[in-house]
Image (cartoon, rainbow, N blue to C red; front, side, top):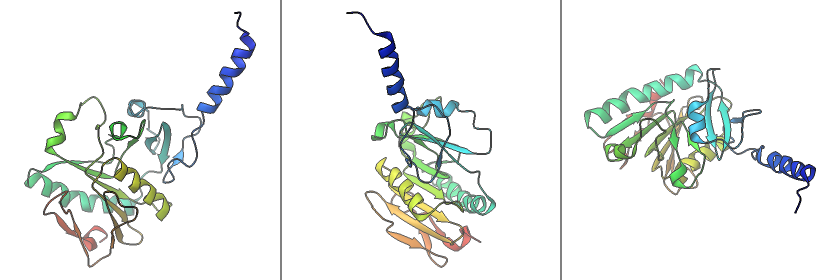
Length: 219
């Protein structure tokens, strides 16, 4: 049977158009990158230039970006990084990851999804599954997100749920402007607690023995 090339071209163009536009909002904590290829993989994300002041993630094949870190968020990140990393190293518990390290959620049922927590943690027993040339192939055991001034409660709730769906056991969402921390646990649909100055952050069974005053994070 002879192929109607004009009809085939029109049909292919229509199918490509359907595939070229991800649903919006797919990642409410970020914005879709205009004219980015779709779908993208986590490997594509690792090769993305990203030298324009934005931080990039890929969510279900859609490339999204967030504004660069502002001073209050940067201070909160550093003030938690220092004691958390020191504690994990002193007790030989595992690895604390930095804001530019990518976790690949492919194996957790979220294809073409790679997130970059502001801080992450995973224990030593997971080291063997890591290929140094690729993204970290699982969700972090602990994910720390520091909310920016333009991000809402709903935005960050959606991101916390992404981590939990990837197997993350503990999520801390820091709100520098409100000086509070939302604590999420696995399978939770809402934070189990919201901590304020005067309360203490606890690593629970994820980073056993680690505690830190909330007030120190936002000092």
